[in-house]
Amino acid sequence: MYFPSYRMRRLRASGTMRRMVRETALTRDDLIYPLFVFNGEGVINPVPSMPGIHQFSVDLALEEVGRAHELGLPAVMLFGLPRYKDETGSSASDEGEAVQEACRAIKKHFPQLVVITDVCLCGYTDHGHCGLLEGTGIDNDSSLEQLGLVALSHARAGADMVAPSNMMDGQVQALRAALDGEGFAHIPIMAYAAKYASSFYGPFRDAAESSPQFGDRKSYQMDPANSDEALREIELDIAEGADIVMVKPALAFMDIISRAKDRFRHPLAAYNVSGEYAMIKAAAAKGWLDERETVLEVLCGLKRAGADLILTYFAPDAARWLEG
Ligand code: PBG
Image (cartoon, rainbow, N blue to C red; front, top):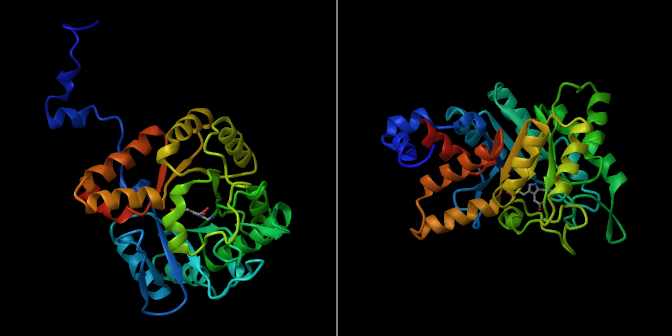
């Protein structure tokens, strides 16, 4: 069967026909909206490298979450900016910190909304690394203990799901054990399973004020050259009990998303990270790209590649565009 008896263009002839044979349906249900929160009232700070994204005091974060909820978004992901940083990142498990406060406030006002919290130390340690230091290296196993406490404090504050992003070995097992031991066996874990050491996190580190003060993250985050290794990471996280596994960043790693979905058929998330957001925003501001068309193409592409869920700073706009 080939030309001229077979003509691919027949089914592309009209908008309605294209709608009928469309293979991928992106909806707002697929989107998770990340937010940056800090203690205080009535303060909102724009993030210069992420136009349209802000750091919010808890009360204004609650308003932003209300808008997201109104748009039909199912979930938010919280990142906190602590009042103090120290060597062990102890503020990360402090019940009075912004993430914990925001969890309580959001669950009180929007009980159906799913609140996910990022479980890491980099925003809370004075050295900016995701784990505890031993000399100039990262000590994996003592970091796990600390991270377990962080996840517990989030669960106690009402988080519906925790998302370890620190890339320590055993991060899922450690969180699962900590949660199960305190009556939180029902709280799912979304593991940043294949998280690469990426230059696309640059704008996020401005927003979360979490840049490493020395060295880099290459001894715990993955080498972008590796693909089989990502599958081993994901396999281990699933074995340790991850309910959802994540690939991050998204765009330069769509092959990983695709392989992971084919191999594991496990709930899979992709993180459309800060640098991916910033690129589109910058090009759109110059009039070089149509923002709406580009964003929807990217998000649809991630879903087509195999992502069930997409974390994206475009979530509110995308929700508007998809339902509008
Ligand atoms: C913390 C963390 C990072 C991101 C999410 N959680 C940054 C990092 O590892 O440096 C990046 C998110 C983004 O770029 O949008 N470990």
